[in-house]
Each structure stands twice: as structure tokens, then as C-alpha cells.
Length: 111
Image 1 (cartoon, rainbow, N blue to C red):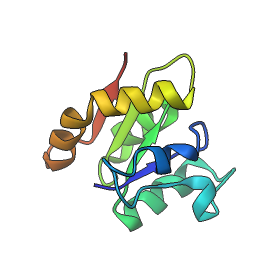
Image 2 (image 1 turned 180 degrees about the vertical axis):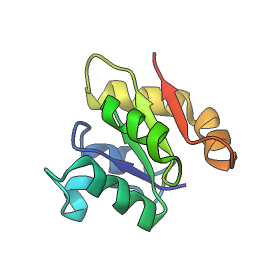
Image 3 (image 1 turned 60 degrees about the vertical axis):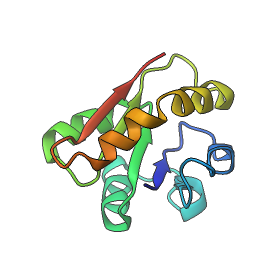
Image 4 (image 1 turned 90 degrees about the horizontal axis):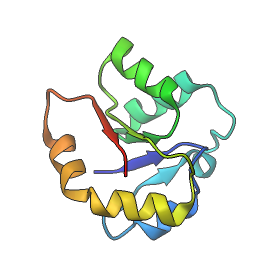
């Protein structure tokens, strides 16, 4: 499973989580920094990426448009890379099951 981190999350997460989520990327690394939410949505769908964000707008898009892409919403007050990394590492088994479940389109994770 490959993740696409939105711009509210650090691009450093790609490297820091490469052992769990290889070939993941960040919107900044693919030239989509500042792009509208729908452009990110379409890119994630076209590239078969799971979109990871703290932005509730993607939760709404997930409910409105359905998958693909799958969306992971992180309910965090702070986007500190160490906190986000720890949260995703802790929830890696849940994320793997979510990615494999054909019926699920949205996963909300909080500490």
C-alpha cells in the first residue's frame, strides 16, 4: 500500500515511514503543493494511493464520491512529524486491514 500525504503533513514522513509504506509520496514531491482538494483526490485515484490528511474536507469528499481513493483522516491537533509517525506506526495493522477491505473507503485515526 502506498500513501499520499497531503500538504498539512510533513514531506519527511515519506522517508520516515518507508519501511512500512514503501513508495509513498507527498503532494509537494509530485508537484501538487497548493492544489485544490479535488486535484489531490484525482491524483490519488489515478496513482492508486491512499490519501492521508488532517483535513476534514477529504472526509467529506470520501463520503460524497466514495473510493477510490481510500482516505485516512488523522484527528490530531498538531501535525508534528514525530507524532504523526508514531500514530501511523501504532495503527499500521489497522491501516493494512483497511487497505485490503474492498468495502471501506474512510479510516479515521486518533491518538
